[in-house]
Image (cartoon, rainbow, N blue to C red; front, top):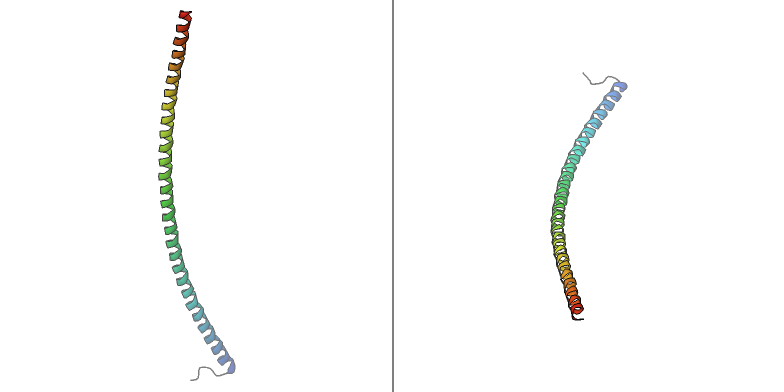
Length: 109
């Protein structure tokens, strides 16, 4: 029993076979493309994780630097407060000395 008894049937059989082969080829290519996309997504995820880790380290170092600068500013503020207090004490002492000297000169006259 032949597969086809007329040229139309042979033509239909060949076209059907070609369509099956083409569909199989498309499916194979789609599977390959899907696998490559998944691999690229994994690489992208790894890159993003590394980038996130790097940025977190930078943030931690910036945080540490800000804390050290804040400590430096606090020390400078304390030092300025102490110097201002000393200046006020010296200023008061100088005023007292001037008033004592002027009082002494007034008494001698």
